[in-house]
Length: 298
Image 1 (tube, rainbow, N blue to C red):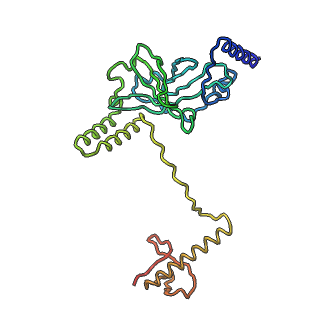
Image 2 (cartoon, helix red, strand yellow):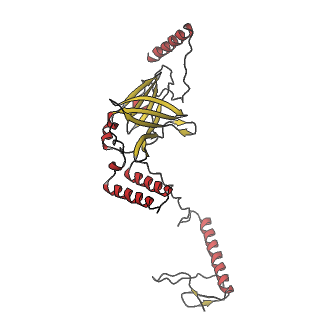
Image 3 (tube, rainbow, N blue to C red):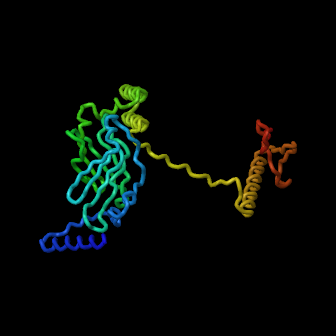
């Protein structure tokens, strides 16, 4: 029944557009295949790539967490949920009307000891990159989303008004830091003043300090490659090949020692100086009593 109703609405909309001489505006956005259809459960419509970062920054702004603010422009509704995400919803009857994530809360932008913006990253795919949004906080009589723009392709800019940032010190970084991190910042600033570190080094240390404070998201360390060396053999052929390799290495070492007139002994004390006696396992005497290869210099 709902499908019949939607088809009828689409038909009437098209008929009005044709008879009025106007053109239907079709916004070219990635297809979400009806994931914002009202018949689809809300938790199935938008799939986030990552989880939001923890709430951070000025404590008086933490009260915004858990709230959402709407802004409607043309046929789009934008929803900004501080410290969570930014979403966009096309308000149309198209079966594949776009509804997606423009960014997930990641980190603050910090310049000159000031929180200058909130970065929402890792949104829906947009070509070979992901959508992201920068939210600017400005003074206003009430908390509301007042503007949305797209200065770069798939990079959005939101302006959020709130009385929580009207005080001149409301977005300063230093007062928000712990006493320990404030002391560390003082030391970094003193080192820069005395030219003990370069400007680049100063900025690098501050970035690490902000990461420690939780204001910036730490870069993920590359995962260490797993060792391909195995202590066990998967097959008899592999075991045999390993034995051949080790035997060849022993022969190479014996030849090298003989070439330099260096004697080599087994634990029994028997000394070899030529390769004529055939391959034998070598042993080294370690301090803890383990055995292995041992070279005796004369």
